Amino acid sequence: MRDDKATLDVLSRKALDLAAKGDLPAAEVLFRALANRQPPEGVYQHNLAVCLLQQDKLDEARVLLLKTASEFPLYSNAHRTLGELFHKLGDHFLAERHLKLAVKIEPLSAANNSSLGTILISDGRYGEAAIYLMQSLRIDPGLVDTWNSLGIARMQQGKMRSAAIAFKRALNISPGYANAHSNLGNVYRALG
Picture (tube, rainbow, N blue to C red):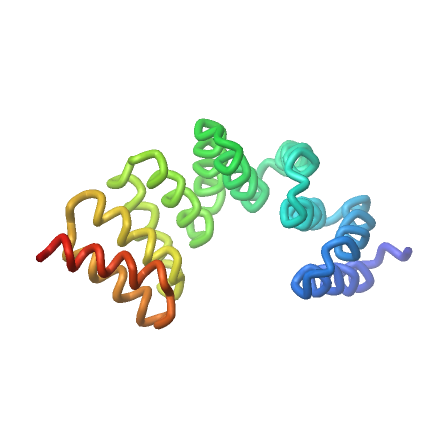
């Protein structure tokens, strides 16, 4: 395989397309081939790890993400994905550590701020979660899940009117979003 950038970009797009179509084994083969190259910032290794996660190969993905984060310590996507994985595995300390590092590296990433806010909700730290979720929404106000998460944080803080506004924003973006409908109904019941 030639290692010129154009060829690697084509293969990367093909692997992403295969993953999007659900052909994860074929995508994994291409991502593995790409991960052995010297890509910028660990992108190919990260994409392989995401593909492995989608196939529930959690241990292999964790090892690859840790290696990628070690080799490319300023690659925030590796830290964000590690944080999300550690959260899924129940290690909230490492989840928060990697997500805070991702936010520190790339503070204007809506995904990094949203992921950190979401795990803070699960830890019951609603005020802190709301700060990161609002930062995420300032960067990208179209994130329906983040609006829903902000509504949950506000609801748990007892700020029902603020929660209702967040859930309505989620529903403006995605009118059929069942979680936001359910959550908004809970707010209305709480308000009487």
